[in-house]
Amino acid sequence: MMDLSTCHACAGFVPDGRTTCPHCDAPARASRAARAARLGRRLATAAASGAVMMTLMACYGGPPKCEIDEDKDRACAKGGRGTPDCNDQDPNIRPLASDPDGDGIDQNCDGVDGMKSSGAPGTAAPGTAAPGTAAPGTAAPP
Picture (cartoon, rainbow, N blue to C red):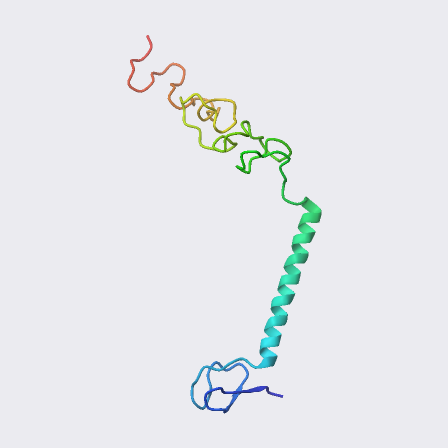
């Protein structure tokens, strides 16, 4: 059996699935049954999403929680995962922060001022020359 709704503009019957009234071309409203079905699908999707989230949290654990994060930079000084915050009093000093070379401050908690070199053979840290070569703007070694 076909469900029909009533057009709000001309009071004619509009079959489900139509977007306009066949009599006056006014935009059709969905029937109560169609709106209820759509609501049911949305509720089922929300419930399924919550079930998936609970399953993932049961398998892998919830998000990491910091026991101590005094500077509120979301890098844990204690109790989190990954590299700990080496200065929990300054929000600009945290793991993965940019660390300009030569300012005397280790902003990214890697133990050196500036970025560490890649360590690949034949490479040098920024601003230094590889062994046996000259740094830019200097004479070659004898």
